[in-house]
Image (cartoon, rainbow, N blue to C red; front, side, top):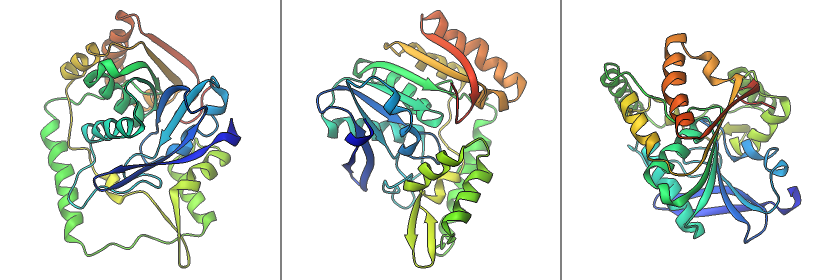
Length: 279
C-alpha cells in the first residue's frame, strides 16, 4: 500500500488542511487523526498493516504538519477541531466513515462521534479515553491561564522561530518524546519541519502550547459518551498515557469513562507498550 500514497489538500476558510491518502478510490472511508504536536506521519507505518480494501485519509490537524495555522487571535480547542473534521469530510464528500484517533486525535474522534453520531460507522481510540474531564472547580483557573497565554503572546512582536540543523531538531523532538523510536522521529519530521535559510524550523503553531480554554466536566463527558452510536474500540498501552496520570484521576477515568464504554458493549483492551508504540 505504501506505493499508493497520495497527498491531500482540503480548503478551509483560513487556508488548507493537508494530509495523505492510502488505498483504493472507492474503498471504505477511514479518517485518521493524530495526537497533539504530531502530524499525519503518525499513521505511516500503521496503515500498511490494516485492511487493504479501505480508503485511509490521515490529516495534519490545523496548526500541525503542513496544514495552515489558525488565524491570529483564534484559540485551538477540541470543538474547533471537530468543526474541522466536518469540513474535511464534506470536502471528501463522505457522508459516513470510520475514524481512528491517537491521543488528542482520539478525543476529537470521540467528540465528533457524539455530535454527529449518524455519520460515524466505527471508532478506534488509541491510548486515549475519548474525553478528558476537568474538575469544575479547576475550569475557571485553566480557562484564564489559556487566555492570558494568548494575550501575552499577542503583545510580543513577531516571534522568530528557532532555526535548527536536522540533527538538532531530531534531538529536540526525541528529548520531548523519549518513547519515540528513531524511525518515528524521522517520519514525524518529514512534515514537522520547514526548510529556511540556515536550516529548519518546526512547522507547528507555537499557540498549540497554550492551555486549552474549552473544558468539560466528568458529567458532560459521560453525556457525550452516551451519544456515540458507533461501536467503539479503546486500545490502551500499559505504559501509556494513563500510566502517567495521578492515581486518583486515573481511577476516576477507569471506573467511569472506561466502564461506560463496557456498559454500552464497546470494547476496551490493554496491550503492552507506551504512548507512541504498542503491540
